[in-house]
Image 1 (spheres, helix red, strand yellow):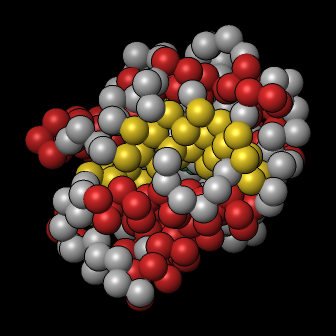
Image 2 (tube, rainbow, N blue to C red):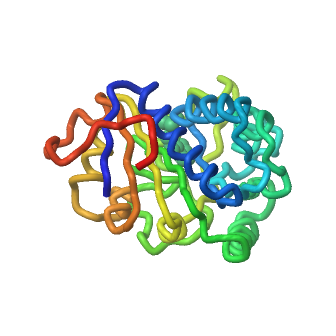
Length: 253
Ligand code: GLP
């Protein structure tokens, strides 16, 4: 596990975008694994800037990690809509090659269908990940089996609380989601996890320096051969082995 620490969130997002762009420049037909959440917004903005300067996504394929169950694809909080607004609508990626788990059909069928698409078009070359405050990746909440595959999951109270801010006052946020499993995620050839802000510091410490355990699903990345964790100073604040980690530069290794 390689840990890179940037001075602030903007620099961490820029370092993350630079790595994705470098991967696409080297291999334009890459299969990208994509994530949602507030953390990814500046990453996608930086990729859109690069696209305007010539970076092409035309040959790429993408797989998103997860989707809420029960939201139509055009619901403002659906991850389909998020991806359209924050990335896909602004770049030249082929919409037919952008895969997101279906939240609007029987969740078991959605999960099964997603694993089938992943085996047909995968493995994922570069998987981008955010981190839940409770150590989740995708929507693999604490106690998720490290051998889990794409499936329907119940969201934890802390995730419901963290994501409630995105939903209108009168609306009940979904309590279940379809997510790629921990084992599905770590099949990616390379993983790039970005975490910023003090509210992620405890989960970061558990992921990087704690035991590998289903209580912190992100700790499974310790077993991955090519996992890079990009942090800002606030998210890195609780790490103990500081001398082991590197400053984040703007370019790919
Ligand atoms: C959400 C998503 C995750 C995301 C995480 C962090 O619930 N399912 O894929 O990484 O929580 O979100 P944020 O970046 O908004 O903190």
